[in-house]
Image 1 (cartoon, rainbow, N blue to C red):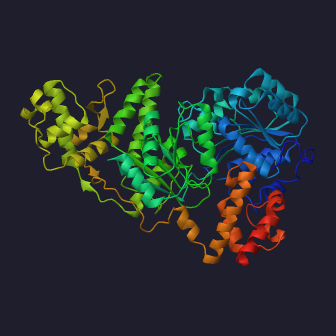
Image 2 (cartoon, one colour):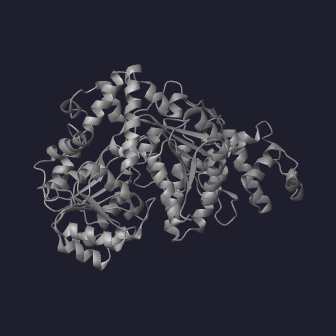
Image 3 (cartoon, rainbow, N blue to C red):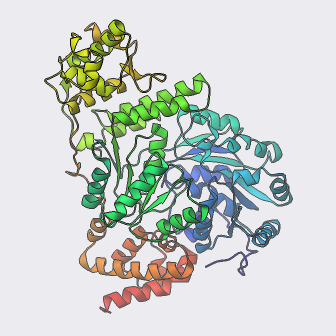
Length: 622
């Protein structure tokens, strides 16, 4: 593996962007607007780049850093991932390094000296470190090719990953006004983009906004019953042996879920901010380097994860916003092969999220913004049309029905739920109007169904005229109706009433019979498999012809050994997609190997002889 002290440390920059793309990264041509973005930065201009996870954002700043004189400085929010980012670049022959608190003073000094000598192409720094006077002075003494602000959505307090340090990064424009700056993110609404532009002084810079669509991801949302059992069944039936991420809301839920999965024969690791730093680092390293690991985590895990073969992302609690949900599900299928985004949610999730909003810091405006984000997430969960259409509409993008989400693959029937919702709203209204009382959803449903519970008797609610008017529907059906009423904005969870329900102004038209409501039926768990591409790793591999499959497995075994020797994740050596192409095309020479996407000059020279020998061994049946 390359080090900071290879013989080519003083090589000149590459002549053109296309040279860098082909020779270093092994790709024949740019995708989408990559070339325009790269040229903009090479020419010294600034830019804002919105590109989905797996869309090639990193190339947009890595290539200009190789072409322009000086070092590309990358501001990245997670120091835990810098090592892997740098390892991957060094495998390509790129002179990359990082500065963060995980290093010894001696190692940090070596990196600083390499930067000052002009011997680095890319230097990764966390925003907290960059903003220190010592680091700013260091950067001022060297030559900077560009600044890349990764995960730029962190600048916005309305985003899902706000980091106050990001709002201080306008210092880059002040101190280095002639050095090009590029802000990059995979997810940002119009409001978040406005914050990025303001805070990073990009007012006169072009915005490059690619499609937010990730067509290889199948979006699926199910009603929560026994969620751990539902999760286990989903993994066992559709993702046995696969790598995946499970997101949960609390630390205790993370640990309980990981323990449950382990007890049931899976390999699951917990990850949350309450674990010791060495434990988090160990779990992250295992996830990145081993096959079949399931990471159960809070949202503390995942930003910047480059692992390409994550076949599923599951949420067992309702995300706080569509932005967060999109960002987290985007960690699946970075290799562009089929992957699943699976979410289970229930009424209690809504109550819990509203309580968290009530307890959150911030003024009334901030809380109202959080409520609107939650309402949008609820609307996505209760959608009866294409989920991808609704998801992308949130980011201002219009698409046709996707054919790769549960509502497209198994379209839900709808029914006229107007009378049912009127009964629900009437029960809540009469409790408040006649008794001055508010209750949560469970008790309201007991009243509607005519259940003589102790609480009903205690409050004499059997005497209400609405008692028993909904006895024709099951408790499960009423929960579905209640969730949809919340999603439609007809009800709200009272922030001061311990999760009790209250009417909204929008409920008036329904109670007066002036609005018809078409609802989705009670959701039954489905697997939405019919007509969609399989996302199982085993099925993806089996899709190769038998002889190519044999070569692919031999290449994977070789790659695993090399990765272990180098101490890096296997995908840093070659992605599965590259190995699949090699197995199919069977290049017999180094020149032929160099024509395959993902094989640059450095990797061809370092691994080419072994790859060709591996193919010949497979052909000879060894």
